[in-house]
Structures are given as C-alpha cells and as structure tokens.
Length: 294
Image 1 (cartoon, rainbow, N blue to C red):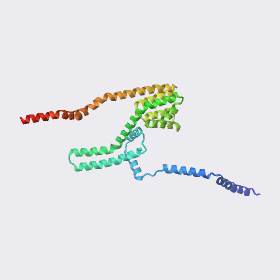
Image 2 (image 1 turned 120 degrees about the vertical axis):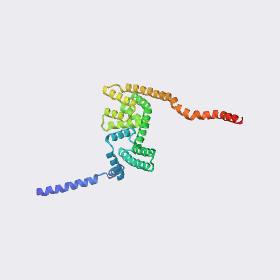
Image 3 (image 1 turned 60 degrees about the vertical axis):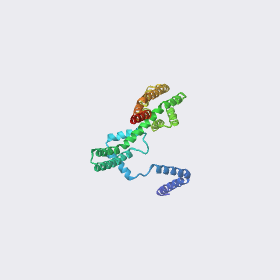
Image 4 (image 1 turned 45 degrees about the horizontal axis):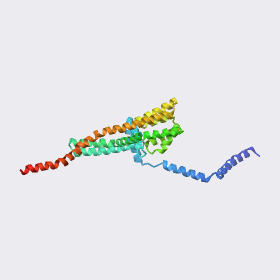
C-alpha cells in the first residue's frame, strides 16, 4: 500500500476513533451535574449591577484623595467589611450625599439671608458628605467593643482546647466554630489566610491590623513571639487569658467608678427640680395663700 494513502487513513481514522470513544465513554450524569453547578456559580458571581451606580462609584473614587480612600478602607476593615457597603459604594454614596447636601445647603442659604441660615446650609453640606464616615465609625466601634467583650472567654476556650491536646490552629478553629460574634469571624478569616498560602506570622499580624483593641494586639504579638522562639503555646495562652480576665474586671470597676459622675448632671437638671417641686410646692402654695388672705 502506498505510504501516502496509509498515513492519510491513519490521520482520518485516529481522530474519528478518539472522538467516538470520548462521546461513548463520557459520564453524562456527572457532566450534567458539573455544568449545572458551574452555571449556578456563574449566575451568583455575575450579578448585574446598574451602570449608573458603577459610574458613580468610579467618579467618587477619582475625586477622593488617596489618603482619604485609605482611611475609609481602614474604617471598613474595623467595621468587618460588610457586604452591603463595599469601598466603591461608600465612595459613590459620599458623592451622592454630598451633592444632595450641597443642594439643600444652597437652598437654605438662598431662602434665608441671616448668618444662621447660611451656617445651617454649610452644616447640611458637611453632614451629607460625612454621613457614611459616621455610620462606618459607629459600626466599627460597636464591633470592636463586641470583640473586646468576647476576648477573655475565647482565650479560655482556646486554652482548654490546647491543654486537651489540640494544636493552636485547631484551637482557633474550634473557638471560631463555637463562637457567634465578630471575634470568631476574625479567627476563621485568619485560618483561611493560612489555608490560601499566607504565612502564620503574616496572618496573625493581619488579624492585629484589622482590629483596634490593645489587648488583642498584645495577644497577637505574644503569639508571634512564641511562634518565633519556640515557647510553649499553652503557657502563653494561660498568661494571656489571666491578663484578659484581670483587664475585664478593671474595665468593669472603671465603669462603676464613672457612674456617679455620669449620673450627676441628670440628677441636677432633671430629678432634683422635680423633687423640689413635689416637696416644696405645697408649702410655697400654702405660704402664698396665707399671706394673700391677710
């Protein structure tokens, strides 16, 4: 047989045979399930957004200074980076609220010629632009306070797990699974950072950067030093848990000491006047009536 004809037959038959084998041997059920899952994930990931919102976000990002953008990103990190408030949306909402506040401020300044109305217009302008900052700051403060309250109990749980035989990462995972607050979320995120290839030191330091709690930062520094110098982690956890309990008791005592000073002004301006009216009112009325009849 001619070698040219033989090579032509091989070049035709081999691809056709491979194609037929691929079609016949494929697992259609598994393929259908995989395609369904992939399509479902694609629909979730590719959520259509309004072009107006995206353009507003881009304009807000372009008009905002880089240092201020970093400050907003820091506020978002302290607030836990809520899914409903990404950085682009915050910048776009600041631009929209700033324009709205400027419009209201100009209207107030135009309708009133007094300096008070002009000051009110300026106040509305500033308030409209900084409303997202105030919301992020408030949410971040609440989240940090919740983490501070959970810290002592979480360290106790981790200490029990380590003394029971678990490693430090296993104790973190157990505390993250059992907890329900923001501190457990941060522990789970730290473990996820390690799973994606980040070093333990970088993951711990990132945990400290995402918080503003001095106790948690000192705990992270102690863990980093223990990991660097090979100190027993159970000893570090025991000391840190004891320190956190002492600091929690000191914070409670400090709040108890501040309570008389905080209640002084409500007593002077709201409670004492009512007591004076209720106690001395009848005597004053009787005195007035007695002197008026004479």
